[in-house]
Amino acid sequence: MARKIWGVDSASKVDQDLYACVKKKFGTPKFWGRYLTDVGGVSKGLTKFELSFIRSKGIKLLPIYNGFNIAEGYEQGKLAVRNATFHAKKIGVPKETVLFANVERFIKTNEEWIKGWVETMYQTGYRPGFYHDPHEGDFSFAYCQAVAENHEIANQTILWSSEPNPGPTSERKAPKYNPATMRCRGNVWVWQYGRDAADCSINTNLADERLVKYLY
Image (cartoon, rainbow, N blue to C red):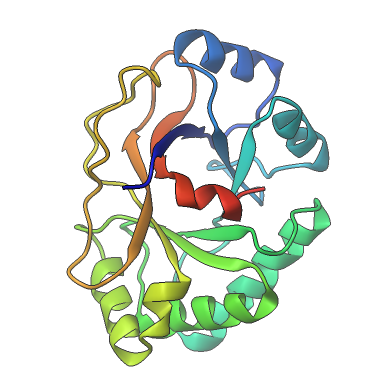
């Protein structure tokens, strides 16, 4: 059984204040999830300076791409990969790093987009991942359809489950690793078990240590 590691993610940028807050109230994360692009009212895009700050603290980056609001169609999946990898390369995120598509439960999603994202991403040398809700929304059905059509998708993809959500905790008080999964095969290697912490603007996560080699 692989060991589990603790980390956080945030829509706001990681500066000295946020880092100090997390370290004091929660612990030192092994990884930090951050968005690659600016999306108005949602996320601040990661900069080279911020990436350097995160890594200077011995924390690995978990990159997230959320520059889309519909996830339908193979060509649109390919386009999302081009945009995600462009932003990753721009700030120096190397190949072999997993890039997570942020597929929220309210985003219309189909299996063609998922195939477009995975098959195209895999060819770039980056690794495909999905942040998703396994229960609500279109993702679960669409992902299982994509896997049925291309079995390799289940092997090539890293999944980040947003359920269940017992609530944010410090590293010391983190729950036992128990993310919700889908009915089909998949590598659920990350679990966002706590959203919207009151003390610092973060979410808390547990991950399978096998994830580490695909973080930067």
